[in-house]
Image (cartoon, rainbow, N blue to C red):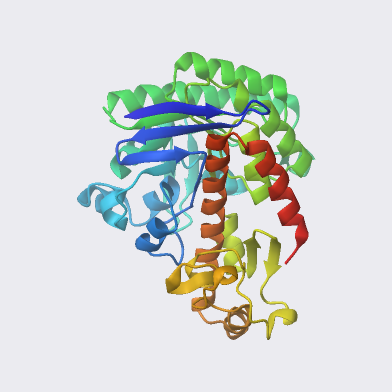
Length: 390
């Protein structure tokens, strides 16, 4: 089941505000979706995700197929019961992970042959197998199996001919995914994925044919695959608003806070990225006033929280009151710096909570701005604040 309702649009951009109803709940859009590759958002309890405003999270078809395997997933009735998350889940198709195997995999018309990175078993992932796995996972949003078009191949930028061949293969796989999804009687929603590399004409061909297949929602894939930032922004500006207005639009694997704000302006409803969690584990923290590297020596004695305006557990603690407003229960930069230097596991736990809270709160503020008709002013304020520096 999927129902998308458009609630508001911005007159100065392609930004929109909506609600997305799925089998496990309602999602307010625009939304950022935390990534839970192995059935967990690293270092974060499901209750904490709910408290910070997560409405939908991701699972990874490829990795969950490898471990714990489909027998275990079937025994639990899917991913929701297994990881104790009763809100919506989106699963990717496995296409990106297969692409990332490089020379270890062989792509044919039928699918992709590769050796398991876990135990070396010879495996064959096809559009049909991807649909079967995702049906067992019982994810609310299922992604079609596609070939992720690379930006370069063997050190050379992918040509238009190569990008076309890849895009057309993904379209043929999309038809097979649709047929298998329907054969399985999957009650959830299947999204098609627009490919075409960095070529607008190919993106438009892919989009047109996918729209003819009438998927419940659409994603933009093949970005954040090594291309220069300006190329990614060009594709992001070109494609989303050309997708059907009455269906949700998902930009896969993007990105920085600036990317999210620009993506919303370009007409995107849904985002995911490992950046907030991965950067947190590496000591890079996002804040309203710019990015902060907590391992730097200048934070050794700093009594401030990561972000004085933030109400996450790391910044404001149990009170939920920002440091600026009198809250004193949060953790100082000095303490987090100390934990990082000592390699204490509490450090990435707290920094991950903060970064995810920042991303989810950013999306909440965007939704409020769209509801209030102040999105243009919000964008200007956001840019000024982020440039201020920590």
